[in-house]
Length: 255
Image 1 (tube, rainbow, N blue to C red):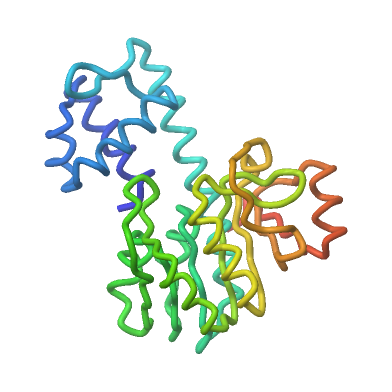
Image 2 (tube, rainbow, N blue to C red):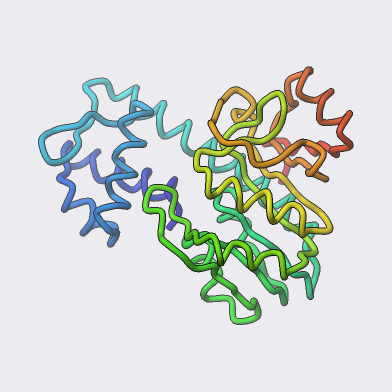
């Protein structure tokens, strides 16, 4: 179950109970305490719930819940459209890299071709695990609980021995001089992969243009295609185009 789906489930439970403990969330959704903690943090941060001692509760205003659910549903639809557009570029026999990203996790869930996939994302591996036609290669190392990826320097260096037909990468932020990420190790993986791929796809929703993050992973010149859901800001679009990036915009009205 994707995070957006879990958040909506939690809100549905809260509508009837008004309050949930951390352990109840774990039991109801069959998830770990770490996963429940991340979901709670996101719900609180975005105004969907308020914290209580040992759990969460609904805000006083029901309108806040309704507005939050609409935002989550809309964001999921946009990510699904980006993922669907990206899936059109994948062909039987491709060797692909799938990055840590909720949008790319949705892409993994749609794949139905004979592929070889490399990833350092636990969520991607889970999304692909039931697809017997896909050869899954999960990179090893220490597990990053916050962002749910594995990293080890020696393992990452093994990427230099693989050539990818396509690499599908996410972003924490798209800034004036390139694509940035929240974790230094994760940024290194993107840099390594981008240099070992025939085509590099960046899947990023529009809000990533308004964010900042500390670690640069990619120059624009290392990206072939950007798939997003709205027009990029004018200055960003010019820089992308000057770097030879093809920008593809998918619209929410598309079916």
